[in-house]
Length: 534
Image (cartoon, rainbow, N blue to C red; front, side):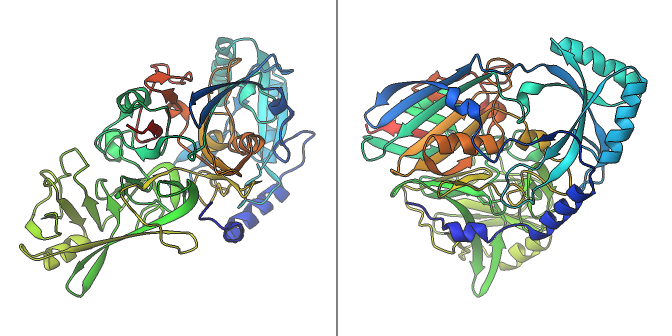
């Protein structure tokens, strides 16, 4: 039922990073409390009340609500430790520091009349990070409202102490007092229709899930992969990882990250690598991107990227030399700037060679080159002659993933479950950095709105959302809590999709969950939908 082999997953830990983390943990002085709650399923999962409804034959929607839990979260103030971003070298702040920092900060709080609380925070159950204590958290205050906590933050800043107001219900070591969960279970053998990933419009565009499900009259749909959200980082709406719709690659993978393959059989989750080459006679050159602006790589993870070629969530890397392919589905003007551009017809025959800009020809493609790859392109592209484009997608075990007209792919990060066990390669998939505690602590280890996709032992597909950032109503989940929830639902293989303000689930134009953005439902990139046969 899946492309993955558990043994290949186990062979991919980041040994060097783990050694450093183990050393850091050993250097920290033990405190009375260690915040850790991920080795077993939390007790609050059994307190969720469930209701169910049938959306269509083969599609069941379950709604879970946690309320009145034996938990009393409150607003507090978290002190911030000053550090330096490991990649950029710029000043940064983190909620966790060393034992020495915690001692000094606690003393300063006490001297100012505040009562400090100090917790050693353990590493979550990640597959590629050694266990132990990752850092020390220092807090003060117990406030009824966010405004009261914010006032304390202002007072502390006057004393030279950096701090932020936080809701303790977002902490993994505090049981949430509210959760709202939606689980769409799709039995593709019983559902008379198709389940696939779609962008809902041109690649360079953003659309709301409610609009997409209304247009397609979808039985159910959720938001899917990570996408560009700012013009400075590329085309808004364009996927940042591997994506394919109706069998056509529209974006390349950014490192060894998780993806879901739909169509031509049961849904399956795997780490995919897409290879695209351009050949002119006997000369071949790699294509380093599809439908993105040359030189700009959102979420990093491409060869030649700076400051890193590894995946790095929500970081934009740059390249100085590469080829980028553009498809007719781009739906926007081609980038301008230094370099060379070649346009091709439907048979890969060169129709023009020149400067960058214009649009993708109808039924054809365009290739842009910058740096040394611009020279290669200019030397090998001849009007009237072919430039052969070859594409191949393989899983982590080297097996070919055929792209037929029924195939679609959406990607995000990280993996959550493999063969029923918690398997979260958070460092390898670039959502945390064991060597930089300022990077993505809140993204991974603080409860957030989440969207997930999974398969169970019966081969059914699970589309799951959890609302978040709503104190007392729905707190959200951490990455480990996602895995724990999915395992309690019977999932075997699972991955995290885009979350936060993007998290959405809808049926035929009606939004089912409460999104977290103050402005309402967010316009997203791509989606996974179950559409009945016409």
